[in-house]
Amino acid sequence: MSIVTGALRNVRDVARDPRSWWQRSKGNIELWANLIVLGWALVFMLWRGGGFAITVGSVFAIWAILAVSLNLVVGYAGLLSVGHIGFLGIGAYTTAVLTSHASYEQLRTEAIPTFGWPFFAALPFSVLLAGVVALVVGVAFNRFRDDIYVLVSFGFAVIAFTTFLSWRNLTRGAFGIHEIARPAIGPWVFDGELEFLALLLVFLGLVVLIAWLIVTSSFGRVLTAIREDEQAIQVFGYRTTHYKLAIWVISAMIAGLAGALLASWSTFIDPNSFVLLESVLLVSIVILGGLASIWGSLLGALAFVMLEEGMRFVPFLPSEFIGQIRQVILGILLVLLMLFRPQGLVGRFKL
Amino acid sequence: MLLELVDISVRYGQVRALTDVSLGVGEGEIVAVMGPNGAGKSTVLKAVMGLAPVVGGHVNWRQNRLTAPTHEIVSEGIAFVPQGRRVFTHLTIEENLEMGCLYLNDAAEKQRRLDTVLDLFPVLYEKRRDLASQMSGGQQQMLALGRGLMAGPDVLLLDEPTLGLAPIVVKEVFQKVAEISEKLKTTIMVVEHNIKGVLDIVDRAYVLDMGRVVHDGTPESIQETDILTQVFLGKIDSGMESDDI
Image (cartoon, rainbow over all chains, first blue to last red):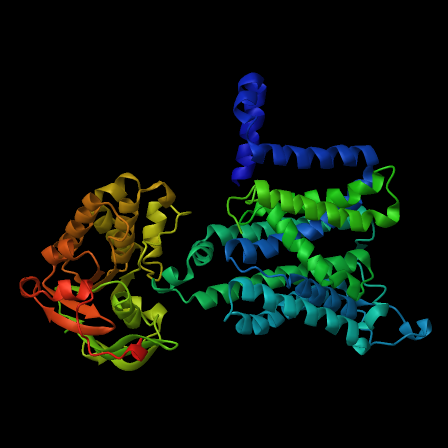
């Protein structure tokens, strides 16, 4: 909440006395990071118009939900997981399988069972299944920490991807799943992109609220203490493994939610959306924005999406290279960030 | 004895940290465990807290075997103040103190303990809204002591509370430990390498060398012998073979 009051204070100060505000604020990197990313997004959206803004907003909302969920684990509990994309995939595939309407027999490819559920009936199962898998995986992961944790979570991402690719009579493997249902409340279907964006933003708001409640509670305080010094907190009577498991499962469930939304938004998914690289990009967003900062995750996601979408309009860039160049630029940005601002754009802690 | 180690042996892989160590602390006492670096002093406390790989012997707590896992020991009435202070620098003083008794659900009792601790440590009261990272080493040590006391312990285990502190601050810390014992009647077992200061405040002391207890007695009896010189200058024959280490 401090971000809101901080923004309001800045607006008030600028209106009152611009010169003294400038004197005080010109060295404030956090403020500039906020202004640049938000300003850049705003200018771009105004320039490209409504359609572009809606697409960017939707992609942003999904990445932001994911980034906030991962920040709970990486930033607050100090568990560097690169396997989060697996939970996104589990959520997405659950919704895809349960809601797809496609009659695959006509496509003459592998047929899978179609259930044709409405989106909101499938959504809880996406969240729940991601949670259950996280619980099972988390019990095993709880023995590990630090760099070993990175490795085992890497293993999880690889297993998840291989499962999506190979379990063909459920996921149709590389063919992917088509005609995933759009959400509907009664007769009102979220068909249009604008309606869907509104829905995404509602969910994003909900996730931010949940995350905020968690990190400001005593539960959240114990989590940050675990990140700082796990043994010290153990001797005060905390079963740290339970806390770590709890936040891991909560975080995975939020990622499952993001998966369900992603599947429904794009109406088609295949395993390529859930490769390890996406997971690494997600970790980059969290670090770019700032560890242990919910606002940082939102800002990181926005910067990342703007980088991706914004580069489409660089005139001399052939469109087929945009994807790769975006990653190169993101890589360079991360290196520069680690060199000059290891706590991220608006974060307080280093990795 | 309120808390007693009976024939405790600890091994870190091939390294024997403690061999058949028996020592204890009676109700209301202050007892020191002393010895040179690597003698196994800190391992004694870690063995009590379930943080060291114990391969033999057991710990008695109020005449019963202590089998609780690390996170339950504090609710038994044993609080551990680890080496190097280890305060949570991103939290305020008051939040740090609260971490010491979060397992407690009784808000009134929490407040009572907080008042007791802040009363005992005026410096913590003054800075209670400041971040722990803004405190000096000595103040952080006071915070660590206070945080241990928040658990409302019967026994306080202190692991090298004066490590890395300036001589004048060392004195303050020892005075505070004596004050805790006097005012709160807390039993204290303190591991120290700082012989001079600690002998002034303890009732008894154990001297450890190469993972064994080589002497115990009152501070006077220890100062009468030259055991400390022998141990610290490496002149003692502890009867160990070189492959024991």
